[in-house]
Length: 223
Ligand code: SIN
Ligand code: MN
Image (tube, rainbow, N blue to C red; front, side, top):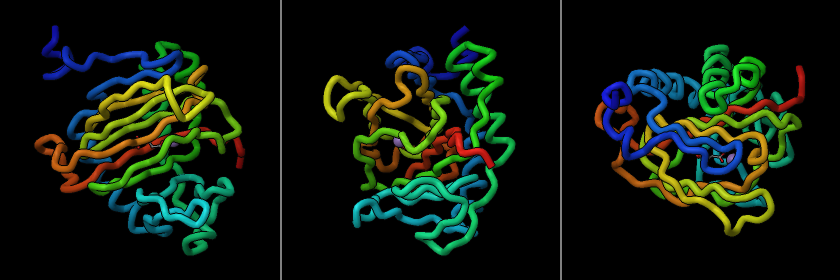
């Protein structure tokens, strides 16, 4: 039975971390991860290149590229007015399909899976020292779940509560291929990346350094 899920399944079983927040370790196969890394290289090259977004005059330590919509602290737009003014790439259909499968598998709710229509993804690249402070994803009008995929180096992810950046929170390890979905009562929970662990990508992972995280969302902004 366990061989169906590969090594590590017993160590890291799927888990509901908080109501509506589900961690499914090892969700993407290594070949899916490597295919996505190839897509990432194309996204990072433009038309809006990967860039560090400034928040209150400080550059974030992660580098970001948006799909479907461009994010900056003032909100979502189609054109990256804080980078080079270009329009971002369209949100890929394959990613929307992957998002629906993620919501279905995380919630077990066929209707929620089928109804999920993500229209943006923030693709973040973490080098060895990058972090992301505790924050809420709250620039979306839709309360549909956020689907998060991690590839490359392992990271320490903190998932908290909807009221404060502080305790109670859960610290968990996100590894290459892991899925994390947060919706429902956890949609506005504070979360962040405390650190990444250099040199911890699995053997065969074609990301030679760093960590990629993709978060898909429904903006609720329409066309
Ligand atoms: C995010 O909160 O947008 C990114 C989370 C992560 O990198 O896992
Ligand atoms: Mn976030």
